[in-house]
View 1: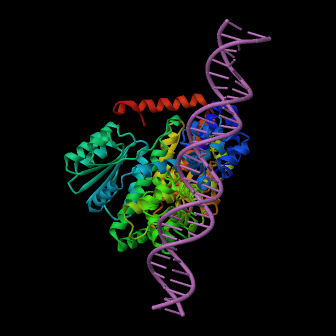
View 2 (view 1 turned 90 degrees about the vertical axis):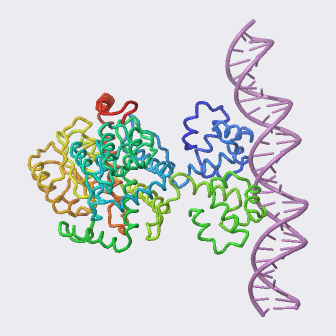
View 3 (view 1 turned 90 degrees about the horizontal axis):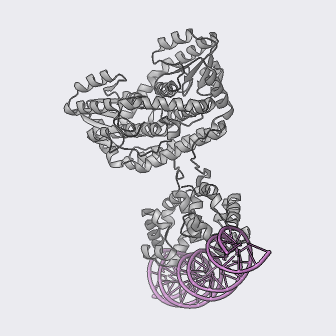
Length: 283
Length: 283
DNA sequence: AAAAAGTTGTAAATTTACTACATTTAATGT
DNA sequence: ACATTAAATGTAGTAAATTTACAACTTTTT
């Protein structure tokens, strides 16, 4: 994806002259994007067609297309390298990598999310009599967070970690209730069962999960996030951040739908906390 | 800075034909960067020099330079407009804004975080006999998430929502224990008390909080994140995502410090989950 | 209503990138 | 070590794209 990365990785496959071009570009990419093929050729001390061939080797259409890709890589001063954490990485490297890959995942999530579905879910949530948030394992903390957000809206919200409590809660659902189930893969058996229970009680089931998963198929509505997970670490990281951001979006949609007076209500909830805090600002 | 923004803002100052060009570009920027000046001119139904003049009006050198700027604006993670959500925003707008402001906050967090402290905290965590994660309110879910991560490492981890349990847990601390306290503002009274209790029992107290806060002052080490919070919404959003990312970083540092054999251990934990899931991949 | 300023398009000039072919360099087999 | 073949690089010409200069047309101002 990132062309600068591609250049460094591809290094072995370059010919001698092509490597000269690579060096010049890597040494000063900012200059490169403002140069013509002739200038760059001169800088690298090679011929123009060599530069062109160099571009093609990196799967670009030609020099102008290459420049476009390069410009994108340099955008924002943040060359989203997005490489995975490696064995020998020091604190500086892995900190950088995790921040960057998290941001990159959010970007991917943003592009994959379906606004139409978001709007429908917000619709449902604003009209719900009771809202439940359930998730297990890593997704439990996401559900927990959702509880914390929606609780402030003065709406009946339910959240359990215990699967038996989750089941019982769903058995008491009515058609005015919305159950939000969170799972990255959508293959957690007990969550699928809960979806079935909730639906058989006419509740609306919203899944924050993968579209074609067993869980996804049991839901009335699925908010899917196609976030690539770095499986090297054996821990859900990026997917969970994306889920949380989605919760933020739903909560925001909720407050906007409820209008201005409602916002004041939120402020009141926040002010209540003041007694438990030391002076000044608030959380 | 961002050229797309510039186009919309500059709108009034455009001439009739230039506005046609602007519309075509805004309607489909991705197409624009791959078109020649001739194609774009035809699409906007104007002459080629008009397109050129349009580019110049936006302080670019000409059409190719304009394309470069446009490409950068469209690059991943770049457009960071970072405006706050407003009353009349529709789902499309607020979704976009929240994703973008979350990414922007992560960028800020990345720059403000102190790598040296991260390294020291990782040090402490790997050597700890017992690790506790405590937070209240919105930070509770962050602590919850930390539990979920560190639990996989086969280290004694503790997490409580209940402040009395938190207190009791801290009273039993020894000097080999590490207590991680999470709070955005660092002004939650009971957390400050917990910090004092833990320290008086010789435990090491790490704060994921603001440096100069009452809580921060009670900690042995403070991991501070200077994340600007959009207070209009009266809900912690960005700060919490940054905290979670920090947890990811600590967990990653932890596994790296423990080395390769340890990583296999993680894989085993993950494989254990398989029984509770439907076929195929894992979480 | 005429002049001036501004806008837009045509056509030519210039710059830029690309293709085809020639030459050189490196690699392999005899 | 030499010949043969393949790969790499460069030269020169061509095609495409961008820019400039200028003319025609609109709109605004006096």
